[in-house]
Length: 123
Length: 110
Image (cartoon, rainbow over the protein chains, first blue to last red):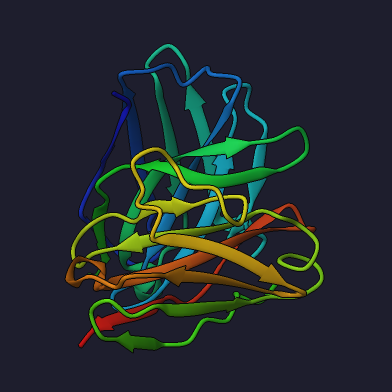
């Protein structure tokens, strides 16, 4: 059974870089059928898609965050990672990693999610 | 790009049917049959309940169904049960090669 687990600091100072890793177990991140994505949810708010990456490194990204986001994949460790730079209080959220279905020219639903990790931005 | 529009809340009595709308544009919901719906209970991760408009993942109740008209997708929950009380989020692929989410709808079972 495929599982995803987020890891990283729960507290980040303003202007610094938020770094999270998602470890995939019970299956290969190198599957040709899926992308791997990051989604966040600010307290009491809706979901916001951040970016998605294929095992080859191809990405789909959210233009509103793209300038601050770096996403990478490490197939040898079955992990993918998120870095968000120059964080502010507005970046305080629960961050989820998830597996994402793909088609020939699109990405689709997130079908398996990690449990999420809360990241607070505060000095 | 703008988020998809969902009603903030919908309520219904046990056994009733309710429908949640998800309105986008011709650049997302209206063009692509790639609307997904997620159920999220408090403090939990979202769970996929419908994808590609009306397809249910294995194990999801057939009380959940989806449809689309023009730029609006809809989720219908039939035979409403207490366990259906949760937040529901829609999402869609968009022509800008992005994923858009709605603001979420809180479903209350009266």
